[in-house]
Image 1 (tube, rainbow, N blue to C red):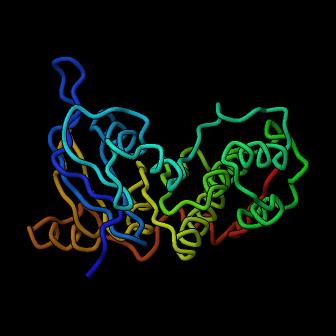
Image 2: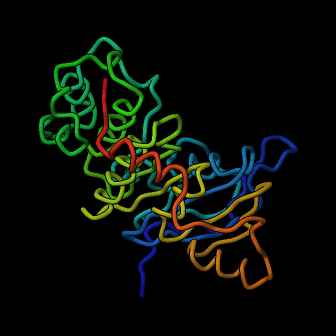
Length: 253
């Protein structure tokens, strides 16, 4: 039986008279890549920020690694890694200096060279953050989530704005992080990304979870309902063509 590492029960978040999250319940299993999807304003960011201890809830119960969110928020913070936005980094510091800074904040020993090697940035160790390309910045952002050796990693739209090579490389990085024992919670607006990476996904709309299952099961259920695409589904898509013609290797500048 799969073990729930995150459990959310009847979670509600109100902003005055507006109910952003409407009594949702779901579990995230240990060792899976779990996708939380939905249109803008669906409530997914609010939900994750509550789990990440960044926002207070109105009501409901949340446990993370067996810890009650209301009673042990500081202990939960030590067990999770949250992808930072670019505003969280000093642009004039080198990647090694930034890692050492965050390691000091976490009070964690870390080998910057090993961490940068994991995210394919070993050759950029002495480069300043402001000199990085978009793909490099995203990979470094993920690297910082690993400094405190978290059990759970939260990634918020990690491949937005990246070219196909950088995007596929980041997919590989995310699966490698999971293979090392971490549980990954992912938000994305790219459905092919969710289908490729996620073991299960929850789709939110208007503050509610409207579907929760594996991508394959959701697709099979839709097909069985009589749905048909308006055009023939091909064995590859245009992104596959692009990767095939230009190569999978990244061209960081």
